[in-house]
Image (tube, rainbow, N blue to C red):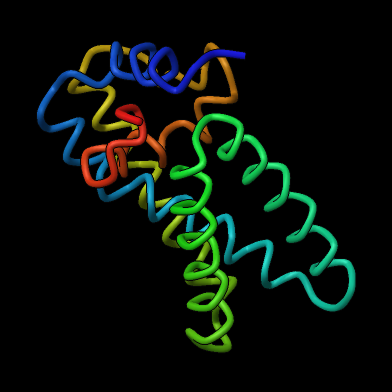
Length: 143
């Protein structure tokens, strides 16, 4: 398994342009939230199982990279779940709108950057994006 430094280095290769970086700092957390919100909106036991399994898998990945990263992403995931459960009856519509709009901006950012999104090469980068966005605040790669 790659180290967090290796992941960030690879991810950073296609995230050099200032405009693209600014777009990612907003869009990536919004996409993460929208996915959590959509899973949270699945009714009943099925939704709870899906949310638990997917969250657990993502958080194990984060904890394997860094304890601090795992803690931060656990808190962020919890916040996303809390907000999703309390925003309104229209959580699905809101989550879909946020997801679509944030992805449009992501692709605009990569058009400006002139490089394809990292996840085209490895789907793990979909989990690295949020860590990379939060890294300047929490310094996950400086342990």
